[in-house]
Image (tube, rainbow, N blue to C red):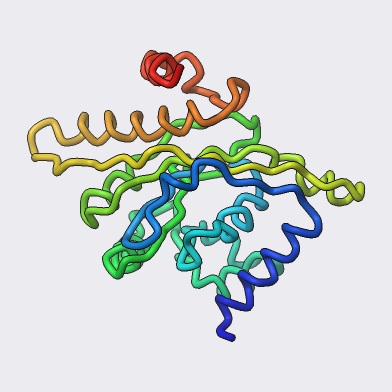
Length: 222
């Protein structure tokens, strides 16, 4: 058993025993081929939830370098072959690693917010995930995660946190020309974030709560 398989088996066992974790909309996640998963970020428990996605054992995640000194996360990241990214610079090495993983048919989890939300609501998205989608040709599958924010506290009080990952339809980003490129990148970033927002309860939608596109998507769902 390799290190990835060992990690995933441990994560699966712990989530099954210690939590009530569920997955909805799994039919939207391609079972093979390069794919980006765009997720909100509430807690360090988000990563185990993503790693236990039944359909994609090839998933890896993009993690900020600040976790390299974390005694718990750093070894897990090594076992899961995570991609480290320095949020303070244009980290071209991380971008190349992400593109290589996608072009090999891998699954890559990214938080477009770029950092953990301390309010529970979505923060403004960054365009890096759209760039990766365009350069790799991989679709973006939006995911809304709930129940992880207070998960550690509940575990410490011997309660099983109810955590859930809800998947939405994949988004295919077309090639963007040089004209109005920045505006188009921003538009598609907002589209990804709004698609994530509709997968979340209203109190989780943050800065996208009153976005007209969110209201439009919610109307389409009903």
